[in-house]
Length: 95
Image (spheres, rainbow, N blue to C red):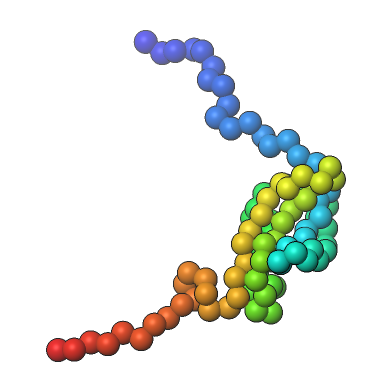
């Protein structure tokens, strides 16, 4: 027997504004890094800004802020050498 009932969609489409500010929070300072127009409100859209700050050796948090001032996404930024995958340690083998 085949069921003919329709299933509801698994994930509804995110509702978000189309204009966001990108800010860098470090300590008590807030720096405006730019704005995104027409991009979805997702932390993955912050990747170019995070990469830029890591390259400059800066730390803090990159935040995606909507027009109402609410945080729509955030990514942590650490100085070069302290992120997973960037740390290497000397291993000593004794046979």
